[in-house]
Image 1 (cartoon, rainbow, N blue to C red):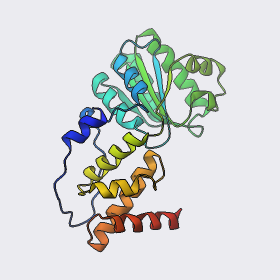
Image 2: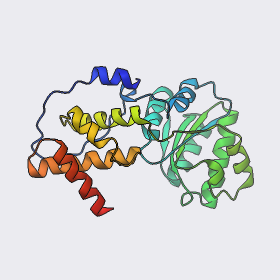
Image 3: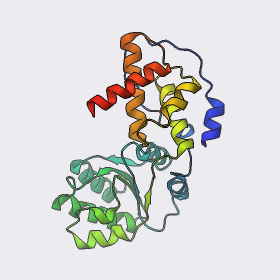
Length: 241
């Protein structure tokens, strides 16, 4: 869904939240907001299973939408989730047995790239290539920055597409604010969004932090989401940063 369509579909009505809850992000495909910062990543996910290699890397800063997009691909491909080295070993076993040949390897970083992890990942890559399978990796940085000591694995990964999800532009930042307030069932007026937009950290994480702080203040002080409340939330964030 593009940002204009999301805005049309989401005219919010007042809702009251009597106590603080956990508000998981919606990972449905119709809730994903397509805008210039993520269009290329969406194109590559849509291109599956016609990827030129068995591996696609999606990278970008925390909160940029990698997890949401990987969930969309998981539903299409019935991919297994790999969160740690034990999961990776099980994925290799299920791929060998022929029970599964699509996987998502989440949040790759230098701490996870042990020698044994790299060796198992190398074997999984080769097996997926042989079986016309697919592996989607999410990470914060381009693979060329990873601490890969296994040269054969490094060469294979660097030969595959690595697509960046960039930080949001003004249009996307505005709709992200609206969506995250909507996820938390908070009524938000246009003047509050207009006030926040030039003052928040211009990132997906910045949007999440300010919405969370406003939600906490609104609940604890039993106040509606207004510009003064938003101003206080920004001051609180500045104090804890």
